[in-house]
Image (cartoon, rainbow, N blue to C red; front, side, top):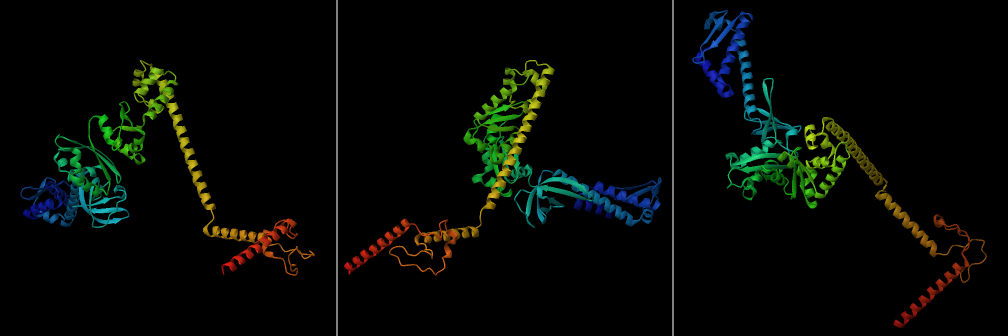
Length: 508
């Protein structure tokens, strides 16, 4: 092989594949050794070296030098080519792996090639990456040829290829977007101290400024919110709260729970717990929908935050003092001191360090400490079982109520059935009214009709339309009182008609 041609090939591979020249030279040397051993035998000692400066190839066989002509004659070119290609591919894979391993957590931009089964294949500059469904922001959709920004989440070697997994759900994406959109952060004037994120819903970012003349919150928001708007649009409308960072937790915790107003913060150093007291009207705002606000605030500050009102805290303190005092070996003074340190339940007391309990108890013995902790563990387990039983009963009650509601809904008549029922009721009412107004036909064996009435025909069949409303007295003659009342009614109607005729004649 021409030395100059060899050097040109090595330089081309170095520039195109981003592979170090030394790696390429070592790959070619290994390929030539492998090919020579196939010719001379695997047990033979063969050494091949390439001069890095002029590209000259030299080799030895069991200590005897091999001339370039002998190497060209005896070494199989095809074998050397295959081994060389394999070595170069491995070197290319290692170079890609190193490149993207350094980019882990950094933001990259690519174009979506395919979007199938919820996963997107993204073409980066020199490799195809995968954006799985689980690493996408909830609710967002993608399509082919769409430009996408994401962070490198995972890099691994798969055979001769490099597998790159992207993510759009990690807090690093928000941080990189802030660095890109806000020059003060890229310059180091404003520093992002902490980020807490629930992808697709809400993110809290704590920032601080190294220059007192620069408002860290205002710089991140931008004029009329244009800077933060670009970030929100990139994240699909995700809400972003910018918090002013402070080393004092008494200041940072209320800031992290904004927009809720906090009355007081009680820090329990031993537990890393912060009890935040708010007014009743601020309780739901501080907790947030499904606990989102307090959960993000806890992640942002690194403290376990509990939201409660002053009345709830007083009730818990009273219950804790009474409960601790009932334990064998716990005096009232120790119970009050435990509550003052933030131990408000048996579960808290069960995980206390024995040395700390002995110190708070004024020199309790090891046996006394173990007895107190053992009692607390037993009562904590009992409380947990009771809570689990209450949850089970509540779930059963909810299931019974849901089943009863479904049964009641299924028992309600449909529209057609309801209409038929109303029509039947109306027909029945009409039949009853007609039968009450009209006189009942007298039976055929009655010799005379009522006074003042013409005899009724007896050869007509009885009216069967009133059978469904017949009472227990059907077939019997009407009582005399009913007949008299009917006569009076007929006479009154006749008199009324006569008066109306007279008035009409006067008018004419």
